[in-house]
Every structure is written in C-alpha cells, then in structure tokens.
Picture 1 (tube, one colour):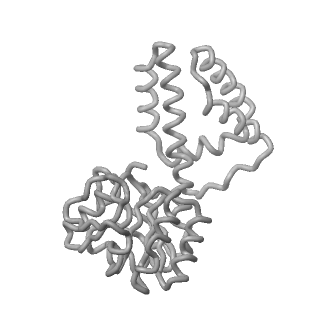
Picture 2 (picture 1 turned 180 degrees about the vertical axis):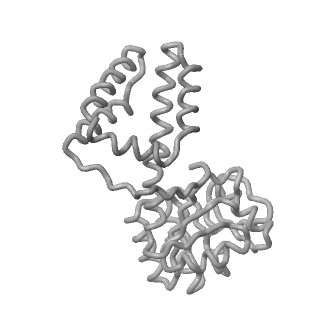
Length: 267
C-alpha cells in the first residue's frame, strides 16, 4: 500500500484485521496503522504484492506508481484510489500496462472515516475485476463497472460537481443568513427542503430552468446584491446568475425518466 494518511491508514488497518498481509510505504511522518508492516523504501512494500493500493492525492499519483514500478511483481493489480481526472487515470493505466501490471481506476464513493474497508467503491480498467474478487471477500464493496481507466473516477468527479457544489451554496446562503439574523429559520427551511426532496423534485428544478430562466436569473441577481450588501462575496450566486443567463439559449441535459437513483452515503 502506498499512502498511510487518513484514508490509507484506515483501509490498511481494516485489511490487516480482515486477514490480509499488508505492507505499506509513506515518506511522510505519519503513524503506522496497526497490523501494517511499514517499509522505509517503496520497493520493499510491493516486492511480494498481489495488489498495490495507491491511496494518495491526484498530484502524487504518477510519482507513486513510478517510484517502485520495477519492483512490483508482473501481473499484479495496481489500483489507484486518487480522485484524478480520466486523462491521468488513462496515463497511469498505460504506464502500468507497460510493466505487465493490471491497472484499476478506483473511485471511493463515500468518506473513508467511519467506514474504513466498508467504503463503497467503483472500479474500472483491466484490473478492476480481479481487484473486486480480492477485496470483496475481505469486506470492501468494490463494484467493477467495466471499461477503461478513467470511467470510475469520472463518475465520482461528475457526482462531486453537485455534492461539493451543494455544500458551497449552502455555506454561502448561511453566511448571508447569519449576517441577516435569520440563520435558524433558513437552516430549518433548507433541512426541510432536502429532507422532502426526491427524484421528481430534482427533475422539476432542472426541467423548469429553461422556461423560467429569465425570472430565476433576475431573482438570483437580487440574491447576489443582497449578499453583497450583507458583506458576503456571492461567488456561487454569481455563478448561478451566469448559468441561468446561458440557459436561455443552451439546451438542458436529458434526464432519465423515471429517475432511478443510485444512492451513495456521504460524499
């Protein structure tokens, strides 16, 4: 295992507790997870591996693969768990294939803290099936979605557009509410809306955008003005104004009908 930070340490400890022999490497001064045999150099951590889990940031993913690629046994599975764009996952897959390794692009679909090895994951690439076959019996719900490296990470990143964006707009709205002295009311109202929401609610929001784009744009311009008056920089609200401005002339996406939700806990 490469990377013994927050996620890597939890996954490593749980895999060891489930009976797997786990060797790890991390150049950072982080604690060694229980049950993990830590190595001072990356080669030692992968010399006898059937599968290598790389749990690093996307910026470090290529370095992690390259640092000991010659020491990984031929035909082992190399699984990259970073949240990297499809182009990087494809490049990593090519590097792995050049050394006889089966590559898997793995997208963790929920926060690892609190779940550990039980974190649901999607996997694509030539090594995805073998990875799932090895990890599912140990308690990690890895779903092989088939296809090339990048498909799994793309699904996660597209989902993040909404999930992380939702957090950002709630933060902006609550910052304004605090300044306006109505934070308790707004929080209760937002919680009520989210709690009652379903697929039909989401579809109505999207499908109502084009016919009501001008009215919604003027409303959001007023919202941005209010936030500015309250001392809050309306970054997300300005983006919504621009999105609505474009919606007048830009076709909306086609939505599956009826919706078939696939829910993942957390983000």
